[in-house]
Amino acid sequence: MSASIAYVGHGTVLIDIEGVRLLTDPLLRNRVTHLRRAAKVDAAALRGIDAVLISHLHYDHLDMPSLQRLGRDLPVVAPRGSGALIRRKGAIKTVLEIGDGEQLEIGSLTIRATHAMHDTGRLPFGVKADPVGYVVSGPGPSVYFAGDTDVFDEMAALAPVDVALLPIWGWGPSMGPGHMDPIRAAQAASLLGARLAIPIHWGTYYPIHLGVRGRPAFLDTPPELFREALLEYSPATELRVLRPGEATQV
Image (tube, rainbow, N blue to C red; front, side, top):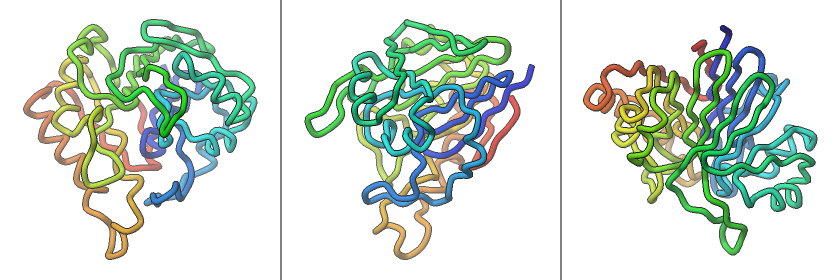
């Protein structure tokens, strides 16, 4: 079976299983308000996408300019209640809404939405929709994309998964509620019975003012902290660190 994972950066991952290509939470711009991207996106890697998976409505995960860059005809799978917003603001023609426990088919793959512990809204006064993660399964390894979430006990019901794409940081030196740090991501890997963990949501964006004197340390340190935490909480899980733009066969 042919399967690969490419870490585009932040929450954006290209999952390619047997030629079906899914892109998660596309954030592809070099600058987003006060944030600057540490490495540019390779546009060639984003060709031939079959569908986009959106986990929640926050601006760094549901970015309308990035969706439009991919093409308005590309199907978008998104949390139930977000369809009207995406069609109106993103001019996207096909939005497939999905809720926790529901599933749909994209080519030969089954996409199942899972629970996520994160904020529901799009600030300041926008639409609300319950965030989700996704388990992708089919003719190849199962892949869990967490989106943005804190760890929760019910992750154990998803076990085992072959590949866990787990957020370990954010875009600044600290994180707010509803996010995993390296330790909590390692605990999630244990609950998921993950064969392989690939850390995401790190090393991509930083506030411009924090980069005036050089590359901020928080762009580089989280994976090593995750490695140490995995040894303690989930030693059977293989760690594979991809920097933005890198890919691996799974």
